Amino acid sequence: MNHQKKVEEAEASVNKMREKVSGSPWKQAYHMSPPAFWMNDPNGFSCYKGEYHLFYQHHPFSPEWGPMYWGHLKSKDLAHWEEAPIALAPSEEYDRDGCFSGSAIEKDGKLYLVYTGINGQAWTTIPIYIKRNVWP
Image (cartoon, rainbow, N blue to C red; front, side, top):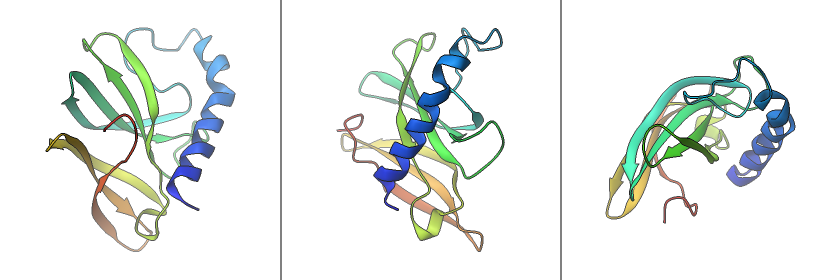
């Protein structure tokens, strides 16, 4: 399955739980948190085109650990955060079991994400440029 299709499935899963989670008395009101489900390590904290970006390991299908995607939040002031589209999905042979730890760097006007792809056999560090409107 291609990357965009996996991202769309993950977004749909999160959207089904969004309202329920946002009304929970345990939902973080100030600190960063995903709209729903599992959040793990923060990754790729960076400043790009005047906004701070924080990516995080995310399993968008349940509150339990599972194949990792990268969720994405952004802020102009580090106090108020807004959700951005899921940035990475395990969609290739080299990352079929998850997109794990990594970083982000700006070079020549583009934001590059570098992460560790897991395929059950090996850990592979994959540099990738995500071609989305967020990072023109």
